[in-house]
Image 1 (cartoon, one colour):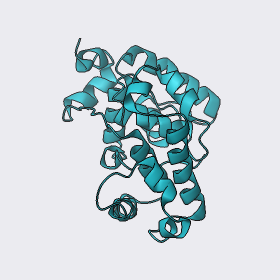
Image 2 (cartoon, helix red, strand yellow):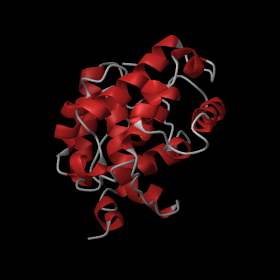
Image 3 (tube, one colour):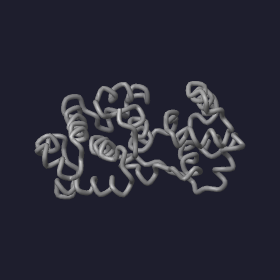
Image 4 (spheres, helix red, strand yellow):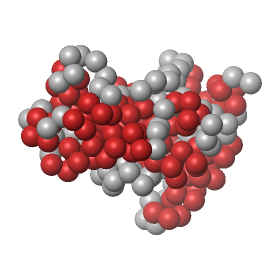
Length: 212
C-alpha cells in the first residue's frame, strides 16, 4: 500500500495530502556529519545555520571530514566559525563516539528505531528529537512520530481540536491519533509540518532543535 492510501483513511489528513505535493524521504550516508550539522543548527535560523555549516565544511576543503579530522581540529578553530564552546564540545562528542563505537549507516540499519535512540542518546548534546530527525531524514525510516516536536503539536492541536492545557494528555491523544497512520507516520509528520508552514524540510541537513 502506498503511504497516501493509508494516511488518507484519516479524513482530516486526507485534505492535507490532496492540497500538497507528494513527499519523498531520502537517506544520508554520513551519519557523523549529519549529527554534527544538527548540533550546529541548534537555536539558529536556517540562514545562520547554513552559513556556519558551510564554514565548517570549508575547514576540510569542501569535503565531509572524518571523525579523526574533527578531533584533530583545534578547539579555537572550530569556535572561529561561529560555534559556542558547548557546541564545539558536542561536535567533538559525536566524532569521538563515531571513533569509539561507530554509527555508520550499515550499523544503524540493523537496529530498530528505539534501539537507535538508546544507542545514540548517551552522546551529550544529542537529544531524542535530534535522533528522531536522524531516523526520518538520514536513515529514511517511514514510521517515526515526533510527538515532542512543537510544530507537530501545534498542527495537531489545530487540526484535531486537541486540548492543550495538559501536556501529558496532549501527547497521549497525539499518540492515539498517530497509531492509525502507521507504518507511515514520518509522511504524516511531513504533511503536518508543511500545513503549518513550519517544516524542517529546508533544514533536513541542519534541523533546528532543542539542546539536550
